[in-house]
Length: 390
View 1 (cartoon, helix red, strand yellow):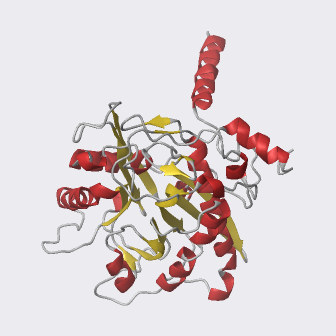
View 2 (cartoon, one colour; view 1 turned 120 degrees about the vertical axis):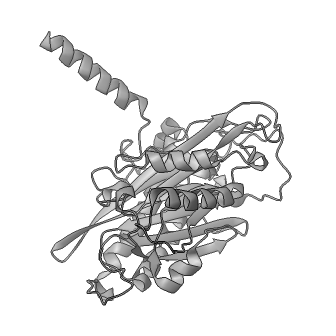
């Protein structure tokens, strides 16, 4: 009987693992740096991530009905249970053809006071309003009668696969993403805000990666979560190999009925959220965020004119830093010791983008438009051709 139960358990675990598409490191793609246990933004203690994914319908685009290929992603720097618990933060934009609300106050105050939400371009408003309502319902400010806040909501455009002008993201989807937030391993690809996104000639979406960094005698974690929806196929680079050039005639996008658009090759957007437990002040987090483009460039991104490339970085250290009444004591790393974190930023962003593409599945959307997933076997074959893999 015990053997039967063990066999069933083994098979169940095996099926679960088998159902998950391999990530970059599962394929032995030679990325640099040591990852955390989950190789995810949730390797930073306290960080929680949740999704709401909306997929419905197929065929011709009927405004307001579908097909629907969109969603919402929620990221809590200290988790939902801590409620109002600001973290030091800052942000940076490589190219500003996009939106991330609330960043003016992040710059002015040095604090991120809210979760970070990511969705599609036309749903920023409804997501922002839903978060504010959730604060009220959850007593986010612990009994205070008077408060103000500026939710941070970012976006990328999914209108080539999704009925984006149908405005399908509702308050219930925001609440679902919040409710689902946890510190567990993160699903990637066609999920949450990344559901309908395309990247570097293939299907894009949500991806994540982390790095373990040792500075003197202390070990820190830095991690990235990306919503990748940018770039031209000709520029796709993986581990230094021009994969896009090699696969230029393979599985190209199918556009049977695009919405009205001036989209040019390379247009699109990427949102990057960086988390770390290293004790950094806002000006240092700005320096971290400014290194994100190095990771984007490593996979073939250039910050095109039509791309919204916007990044935010926060530190979960110095938990008692925010105080309206009293002075506080802080810890911070010297600027001279930040270089390993700069390297980790570039590495984590690069791998997170490729993880998003590897996890994605083929997706057809409005009017039969289609984006194909990056084919694992052809990718590995190409890397071997260039002697980047054995």
